Length: 191
Image 1: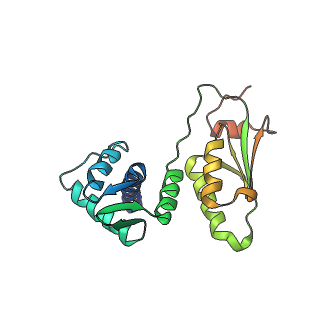
Image 2: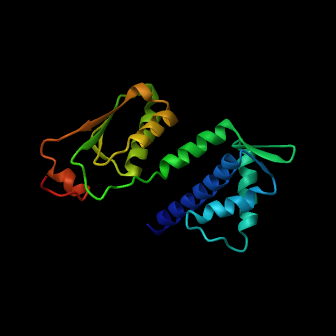
């Protein structure tokens, strides 16, 4: 169990590092090779990562790996985000998406229904894992529920996974016997 937690922490840290570097390059558009590390370190602080003694060295290695993997492109002393890098950044942003929960629930459920063909099974699995990761609850195999507005997230999800027509977002006023769902999401049991 401790190994799983350690691996999960390493993966989170690696993802945060990638996200910091890719986002720094995206925000600046085109960055000087030497400027990437300091800008990324500033961005990492927003994740609560406190720079250590070797942080610049670690950032430089991460940057070089991103270039090797085709997520960044180095040319004439400048670094640019590639299309593949943009997709990876979008994916990392979706995984770390946090919803703003209003003070009072509007008593409406957000339902997500998708019908992904069998030949795209791995995409279906990715969507399910993403929905679980951001807090959705599964009602049935391809029917998911969330109590708060998440339309922006769904738009991002559709664009990132290219499933616009296969994914349906529905706002529902009531669900029969929703007591367990209300408990699950920590909502008032009475309307």
